[in-house]
Amino acid sequence: MLQISNKKRGFYSVGFVNWRDGQREGGGIEDPIAAVVERNARVRSEDPPPQLYAAIGIVLFTVLFFLVIRLFKRRSSNTILLTGLSGSGKTVLFYQLRDGSSHQGTVTSMEPNEGTSVLHSETSKKGKIKPVHIVDVPGHSRLRPKLDEFLSQAAGIVFVVDAVEFLPNVRAASEYLYDILTKASVVKKKIPLLILCNKVDKVTAHTKDFIRRQLEKEIDKLRASRTALSSADITNEFSLGVPGEAFAFSQCQNKVTVAEASGLTSDISQLEQFIREYVKA
Image (cartoon, rainbow, N blue to C red; front, side, top):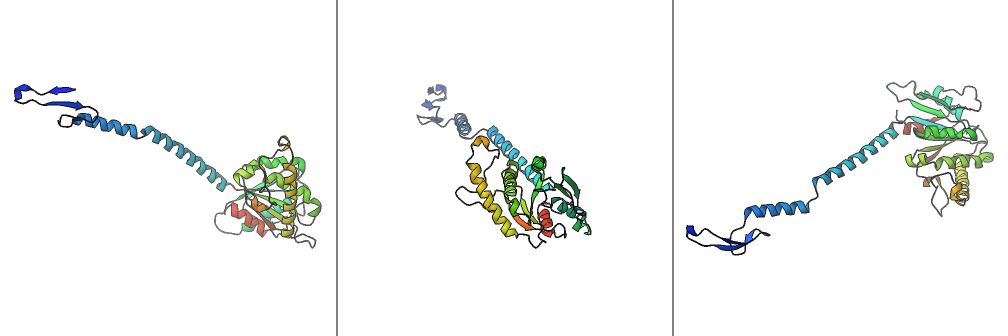
């Protein structure tokens, strides 16, 4: 654009204004307004809009909020589930934890036994102690689905094994344990599981190391046979172990440990230790 200065002022100045860079090609001074407009336009074109930062912030805050809530619920849960085959001694352990007594033996439970209290061994302690909600889930095969009703609130699972009658029941115990370890709720929440070898006061009781090895071998066989089934026949949502390797409990996504106890003689210190590891007093 050609611009001519006012003749009456006694001089002529001709210049071509380059509106792109705000300078006169003929040597005139820079147009300050055009320069400011151009710089602002360049900044706006290079920087993301503020709305984008706000949206990202909202998404990150929402994700963090739900993660904190989920972690808090898991840590604040005080429910411990006792499960295992019928006759393994779950109900005796339930009464020992709650009352410090075996109640002169028990019969097979058809409904879950549950109660919320401090552990009997802690009743003499001073100060506030967090109570434990203990659920004794029936071991009969037709009643095992009741376990699913409590898994969502479980802080830990205790799988009770009869250390005396272990070998005749190793297959059934392994199948039940396999089903628990591959449940979606157990895997996703990484619910810790204790394999509790009960009745170790008996002379003919097997050791916890022997029981662990036999369970791992049986579960390895189960894993191979169930993998061979068609996907339509498999009800479990998660596989177990590492493909190509012999199964071991250390491969599970949730923590699995093994301990010993005797419900009839009140030797349940390892069980109580597991409970208080995940339900803080």
